[in-house]
Image 1 (tube, rainbow, N blue to C red):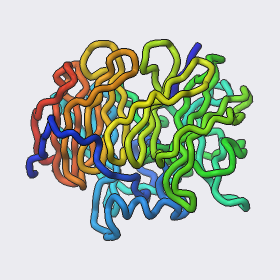
Image 2 (image 1 turned 90 degrees about the vertical axis):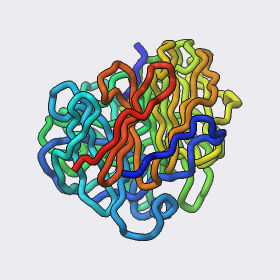
Image 3 (image 1 turned 180 degrees about the vertical axis):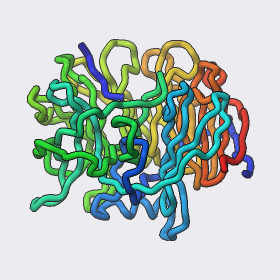
Length: 392
């Protein structure tokens, strides 16, 4: 069985030719345990300062309050997608959705975090494991460990994100930020062991890549640190919770995030890689061997990828998000993507994808420190400005 893990007007320019705009993962958060236990994967945030330059790239060097990321999930059990806002230099917030895409402030709190890259059951023992970058005597490198019991992935139905969310128990918020998973010391990380090589990874996505039923790892190796451009890597699960290097070295475009899914309908999990420059599509032959499709999507830095059927044809499409705009890319069913609508938003705003209006189609939720805007999905690959307002 194949496994995968889980104000002022905003300009709209559907015919603009450029792809997702320049942006890069930002620095982390300051946290504190409070009621509402969520865990959120982030793309390497604030790891011993190695990626602080990326935060400055996106946000500048000031200390003004800004949003870092937004996550959509049902936080109160009423069946509606609520919002969890992760800031820089500000408090965390949850926003309640009335079921029609109208949001109001529900809670404010602070947290502290530890950056984690991925979450999944690596050794089939029924308990979640984590992959994180950690410092040791050799420097920073990925390790694997067993997560606290009860960790459950959550998020909008039918949407795969490069920044997924998970919940433990419903008692405390425990994590945040870009493509990895941030987790506080809510519970011990047991059975810690080196895995996935010696070099730091920017993003890790887990899925069964070679058809043996185990969660393998696709590593986006990065942009940042002393080596600016590293090729991406594929590692196969050894069945004991560790990994063996496949030897593949894929691309050299400064990759920041990765999402896995069957893009061409052949039953094998392919990869969408978000880069500092144009994004890439890599096809899997079913044995975990990836080949470059030759496609280059957009021209700017991508920090968030959403994979979902946006036009109702049964094929997974893409929304590639940048600092100040994102773009729809429509899949023809063979894994070939054509440019779709561009959505612009403020540089200090962030975006998430999910059905917040209850019409059965994924919507785009754009939010800042005081206000939000909902672009309602039409079900044909396009979005219409639905409403906007203040959540305070």
